[in-house]
Amino acid sequence: DGGITQSPKYLFRKEGQNVTLSCEQNLNHDAMYWYRQDPGQGLRLIYYSQIVNDFQKGDIAEGYSVSREKKESFPLTVTSAQKNPTAFYLCASTTSFGGHNEQFFGPGTRLTVL
Amino acid sequence: KNEVEQSPQNLTAQEGEFITINCSYSVGISALHWLQQHPGGGIVSLFMLSSGKKKHGRLIATINIQEKHSSLHITASHPRDSAVYICAVSGNTDKLIFGTGTRLQVFP
Image (cartoon, rainbow over all chains, first blue to last red; front, side, top):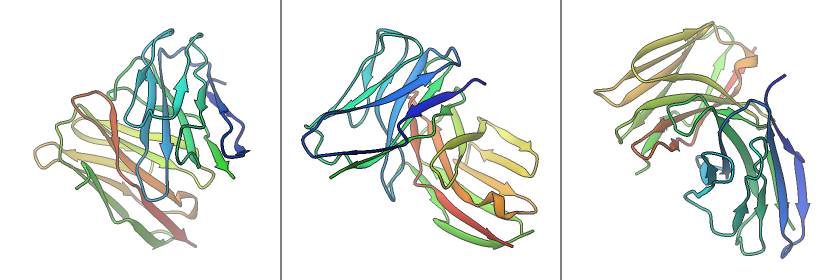
């Protein structure tokens, strides 16, 4: 089955530790995205990648980093510089970059920093 | 003011009722998306439209470009329709702008 996988589903970390969230897709999509969801707010774009070996900052990139070394994979690292990292993180992909394409989402990772 | 506004924020219904969720936006768009977020957090795309109306099963989505407004209708609602419904628009940056969602609960 084609789709997007994110792991783990729940993640707990101590304050000051970096943590990496996994996102893998087997849809052969060029574009991938990371969003953050907080209660009462709409999804906000952290980083996106239009094609392998390329990525761009979204609206709230501070304290996060990404890589896109393979088409299938777009891991997100939450660094200790992120002031309020506890949130629900969603990865998505589209055939090519742009909001005019159907969005495919992963199941999400809920990160709690203690 | 948010660029994408949804109403109502919360909605409860009895099984079988006709449901309408509204989305208004203030930017020029190339497409509007309706998404469904299940209690576990996963999101699925229901519709993507730029004009007119689309129907899939009991779900109908309409958009009025001139009025910058879209509606999502659910006919013969069922408890399994309980979820958060999210409207998102693609503006001139080609990135999505999301509404805050409408939480729907359908009771048997």
